[in-house]
Length: 286
Image (cartoon, rainbow, N blue to C red; front, top):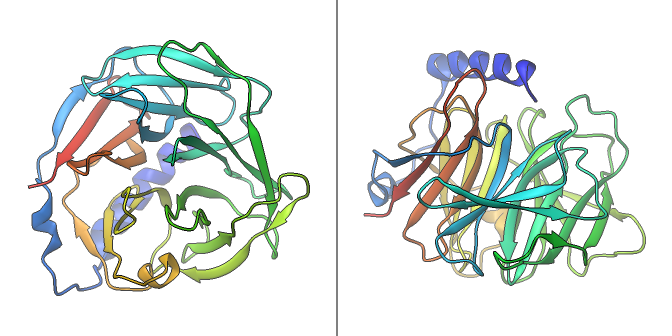
């Protein structure tokens, strides 16, 4: 997603300014996070960053992936914006790496992007999170899946920390659809995901959930939508509830979001798009 996505972002921003409406929420949750983020320039630039996850094994660092056509590797990016190293992920393909997550002690990579909506199957890779001393990851499990109703382009997914169910959120459908990949996953045959709901908007580029599963962020190019999960509520039910739009500093092509593991705030990261710089943003919890 290079020039075309940048043009689509500009169009989406104009549409957002003209007609975006927030579903009301009685709780003023926008006061939970600072409206002005801490900014750290990324050095060297990760041109096509499409997903980030806060590392558990390497305190003070984030894992970053790049999208389709780039090498099958992850960047270890410090909170200070400095790239420490790259780690090669062996034996997989980067057809459309969009979004990533850490659940338990494993990293999950969503090979779920499909700009032209032509593919019949998709995959999510997972493996034990490596330490910073690692150069290559070789022991990888692949979860293959298909949709029950044809091809979809997706840039976001969530993993329920309690059930391990995976929720894939499509991008180009209007509104965005939510498909559920239930645990336990079949790692031999192709799984078929189930449609479990939809959002009130489209163009979803990333998603994140807290370690305790109580808070969810859904990101588009132009907004960050915040949901709170009530006790006993499923993720599907939570995503049908009113949400709050959090303050957001627009990025050139923002496609990545993650909560900090200690729940102190959240990070966002963008592709460079037409920009010559790249910033890591952190929105602290008040």
